[in-house]
Every structure is written in structure tokens, then in C-alpha cells.
Amino acid sequence: MILSIWYKLLIFHAFGLYDGIWRHAGTPEIARLAGASIVASLVVGTGLSVVAELQAEAISVFILDGLVTTIGIGGSRFAFRALRQYVVSHQGKGRKVLLYGSGASSILAVRYLRQRSGPDRTVVGMLDDDPSRHGHRLQGTEVLGSLSDLPRLCSAHDVKEVIVPVSAVSKETRRRVLGQSRAAGVECKYFSAELQAPTEGEPKSTFGCP
Image 1 (cartoon, rainbow, N blue to C red):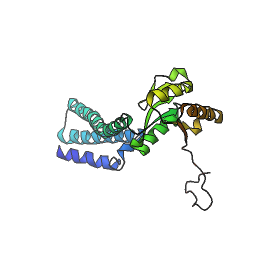
Image 2: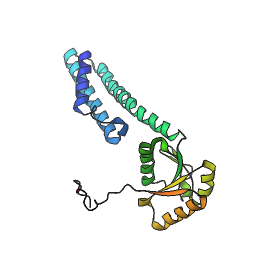
Image 3: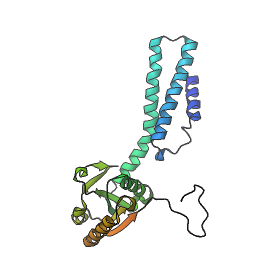
Image 4: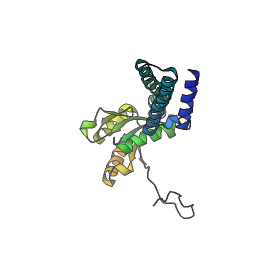
């Protein structure tokens, strides 16, 4: 049994499970974990069935072992990430902000603010002019209303700042959000996560950015 555990650890190492930073783990890490667990259980199960001549009923134990291993290892790693995100999203400290939009760019902005701003900013909600999205939650953040609700929401939640993902909205929409923010007496800032060409004198990008 101890030998089988060592075989599993070697297979996990071969799949690179100990090389990643799990707080940034995503779908590729989940797929690699599942693959490593299945391969490890198959290798150990096949080896023991040949050496010990196990019955077919006993082999099913290794199938369950693979499932339990995947859930146990994945759960232990992602639990810390989920706990950290939960604490950050519910700490209620720092500068309270609203995000305009509830698309992919806004979700990226939420993640960025939680990882980079930490306690300096707390996202209290999102704004979206699509009524069908109101009340929904994305990354634990609720879509509280539309742009017309901005003054009321700023007052109700003590919001100090409105953040707009520039790549997801038009210039006209940005002007509208800016106007509503000024009317509510809060700051308006733009969030951008786009690749940019280097300025004069900076080294060229090795990734060939346009």
C-alpha cells in the first residue's frame, strides 16, 4: 500500500501538480488534476491486480479511489482560493466601488480589484442596463440595477467610485456614466486590460504585441 502511494506521488509530479500556483488555478489545472488522478489509479490498480490477482469487484475500489483522490486534492487546493475570495468580497472595508456592466470585462475587473487592490477597494455591486441581469450574481457580486439607479445606489451603499471597463462600452456610454457619477458626487475611473505598444525608448515586447 505504501508503495502504491509513492507511485501516485510520482505520477502527480510527472503531471506537474506540484509546479503550479493553485491560487491562480483554473480549468487547465482541474483537467490536469483529473488526468493525473485517473492515470495514477489505473497504474496502481493494474499493478496490484496483476501482482495480487485481485477480483473484478476489488478493482472497482480503485475507481472509487480515483474519484476520492480527485475530489480530495482538488477540494483542498481550491478551498483556500474560494475562502480568500469570499473573505475579500465580504470584508466591507476600503473604498466602496460600483462597476458598470456585467460582462466578461467587468468580471475581469472584479478579479483584478480583489487581487491587486485588496482591502483598498470593495466592489459592492454592478450596474447593467439589461433588466434581465438585475439580481444575478457574478463572482459573488450582485447586479444591483441600471445606470439610472447610480445616484440612489451610491447614496445607499456609500459608494465613492464608479469603474467602467473601457473595452466593453462605447464612448457615448462612458460619457453617460461619467455624467451620472459627477451628478452623484463620486469619482469615475476607467479600467483597461488591453495590450499596448511600447512607447519610444522602451524595449520591444518579446510577444510581438502590435
